[in-house]
Amino acid sequence: MADEPKKLDRRDVLKGLSTLPALGLFGYAWQKQRAYQQAQLESTAAPTTPPADLQVVNVALLGAGAQGQTPLVRTAAGIRESRVSYFPQLHQYGVTVGQDADPSLSAAAALGLKQSPHDLGTCLGCHATSVSRNLTPLVPGIQCERCHPGAERHAAGKGMPLNPGKLKPAAQVQFCGACHRIKPSVDDSALENIRFQPLRLMKSRCFASGRLACTTCHAAHEDARRNNPDYYNSRCRTCHTASATHADVRAQGNCIGCHMPRVRLHPALVFTDHYIRRPEKTATGLPSSE
Image (cartoon, rainbow, N blue to C red):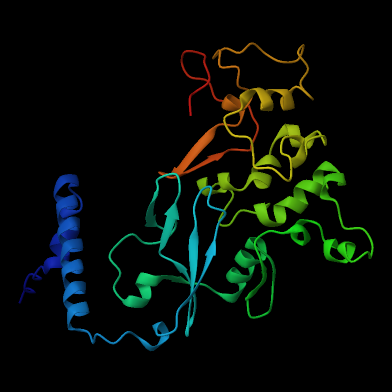
């Protein structure tokens, strides 16, 4: 006796529809809507009392405010990176980069991602001057001691602090890279690595020359000079003499506009790629635009 044909359930039908672009998209959207409606029903039926780990909430804020500011939320169950950040360039709040933008299925998930002690130590180790073992900032913000070890002893008349500006270029980039990153967070090909200036800079022939340090272009106690191509042109010409430079085929008068393009990783986040290199050319022979 032949086997009876297998009955297709809703999941099998959706899998079949997914092979057809238009119908598959409709099926996916319908399934997501059903999941959202179910989550709403479950949240409505759930007790109104918040979970025990949400009854005590303390908040710390990370970020200088130029690109974004993200709270850390401390609960009885641990510390979470807030699911919501403030983006000054947009003058509005939005979902934190790297977090799920779909509706939250619980109050705990709505607060954000729970962080491990190691990740928190890495975050606070660079966003504060010093932290204790329980990850409570002892000296919030970036103060002298963070970049000049020995500064407190120096203020008390006991010795001289470290001056990173006097380090050799490679050592200085390594020193700054302790916070600005010299290793990729995921893999070396990830687009998000553009955020990590030392990591990208170390790929450049300019860095391999042994003459390029962070302070070649950036004054350590000032914000980076944005929208000032003349300043950065002058920095490039400290190594690239007039006889060695090429014709400005784009007539922009902006070295880094071609060789260190700005990349938008998020509607509110734009970073200068510090991998200094020749830009790819288009069919017209001109460098491709950003």
